[in-house]
Amino acid sequence: MIRVVVGGATGRMGSAICRLLTKQKDMELYGAVVSSSGGNVGKRIEGGVVTLGDDQLDKALEGADVYVDVTTPTAAEKNLVKVPPLGVNVVVGTTGISPDTMTKFAASVRRHSISAVVTPNFSIGVNVFWKLCGDMAAVLKNYDVEIIEFHHNQKRDAPSGTALKAAEIIGNQMGINKLVKGRDGITGVRDKEIGIHSLRGGDVVGEHTVIFAGNKERLELIHRAHSRDAFAEGALAAIRWIWQRKDGKIHTMSEVLGL
Image (cartoon, rainbow, N blue to C red):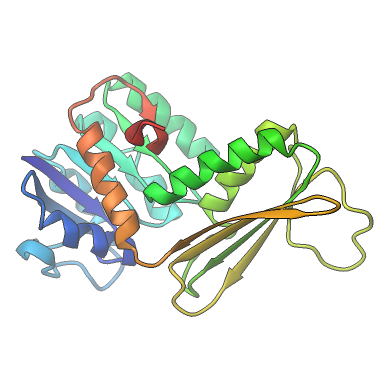
């Protein structure tokens, strides 16, 4: 039985993961962590688990196999430094974490010989989407690239981690390292760049469109998420893949899915 602790357990993503966890025969929702400053500490959630504040993360992780972080960038930056010394493997889906924090986290994962999966998006479809972004960029090297991402009105970071990952993959293939996040005013002639545009509204789970525009044609690659369960199911796949590894490395969902 894989004993899993979920950080951000009462958020949109955390709730979906907790709900699916309780339905798995090989997993146990072992603990749930929420913000100590919020109003959800001591709340009974899926499977009868009572939430603990993130100031009690060490207690929540006693005896756990895997910690899943789907919190906020600020919370994750505090939480991730605490986990590797406890010998618990980690799955991170939180986006917007600073590069400095991730560098320190990678060093701690290595030092304490645990294993981690870090991804901006758990969805199987999105990970195939990223692969296709690279395949298309390798062929369409002279095309202009624009990325549009659309999320619900409560999303905190922009652009989305999924859009930034797509831009990174495409940029590596096309030799482009300039990102333009929205445009305003007199921008002049388009440079060798990748444009990223963020839309926020309603309860949109997540939509990403990559446009490859040539002079006589354009191709559009689109992924639309209809339910957060698509992400939660990917998180479960990551948990199953990582839980017995102890290699001191950070892995990707591409590895989890064999892409």
